[in-house]
Image (cartoon, rainbow, N blue to C red; front, top):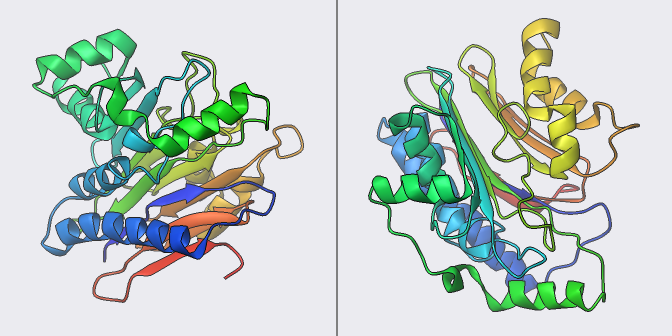
Length: 300
């Protein structure tokens, strides 16, 4: 049984997209889903599948990761990512990237080729070069749409609202789980701000015995609530189903840590959980040869 769940979250207030943009977002989700599913369907690993799925979304400027990353307050794009192997409990994480086309690919290299598990900023760029990754000119990441949103923030026309993320969880034919998460962070963020997507147990976690989980929403509260690890802990110690564990993690300490949270998760038996406290949650999954599921709105 195999699954890949790419997703991106929205905000509490109603969010409206043109039908044209909605269709483009769904196509982007379908492409990311297909990239991972093809690997799983031919007997590939969950780790390869989540990397391929997230790379697809990093290459798509409609998603806030890689090329579509939000501008920080200085007008730069700083991205971050993590990947974790549920079989070995090894992981790789990167942050403060300004030149790396696919942050998740660099995170994978950190996991496999580096004596450390987390690299940031200049050190991460140096490691990328040492591993033969081609660095992009910063202009590659600066799309017209993101520039317009950044200018609106500078002109105080509205408050920063973007805190979207992309991620994938997968279960392969060998019974292994994996997770990958990637983001450009909050639009208008301070230079050097790090979110939850690169934090093990915060925005991302995988363990073959229990689950794989990837989070999206307000990074600060997701880190402080250790949301991805809460899914793991509720499954392992309270023996909750994956859906109940994800639901409780979404609400964990909500009285003290208020904000958007969304979680996709998968257990070793292939049960899927999709939970969010937002009205928009762009998500997709596929089980073996069944028809893919792709949707944007949580009330569907």
